Length: 157
Figure 1: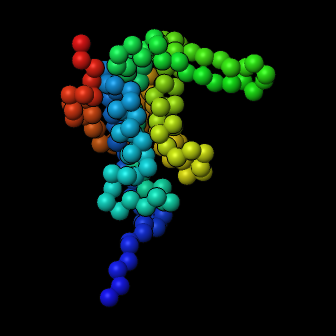
Figure 2 (figure 1 turned 60 degrees about the horizontal axis):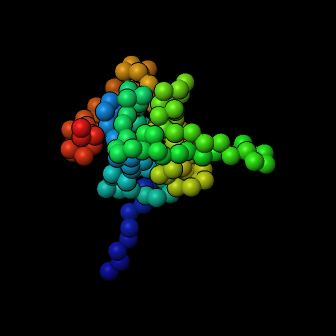
């Protein structure tokens, strides 16, 4: 008697489109949910080396919130590549800046496997929009009410 583990083939994968409204939602919890959906870990037939995740469309990304004082005290660092080129910024500056969707994009990117071609491909399936409108209505995304799934998903006063 042999037992084998079923492994998903790339041709067998059926991808879905999901839509999430991020208004008033905690960044870390939303990023975790999105990263799991992009990787396909919510599926029963999850295979680590196959791109079996869904496409995720997130609107109102500019209205996400942080718990505690992370909005002002958390620091994002990056390096320009030149000597002494360490730059820093806070989530508050990024959310009020020109590209507020970068806060959630970086949070999700850092939850995916590090520096792999598969992770880079899965990250391209994430579509972020600062406003309430998005351009993927033709794909008929299934709307997920992430805010009401748990009381901890929104910031308490």
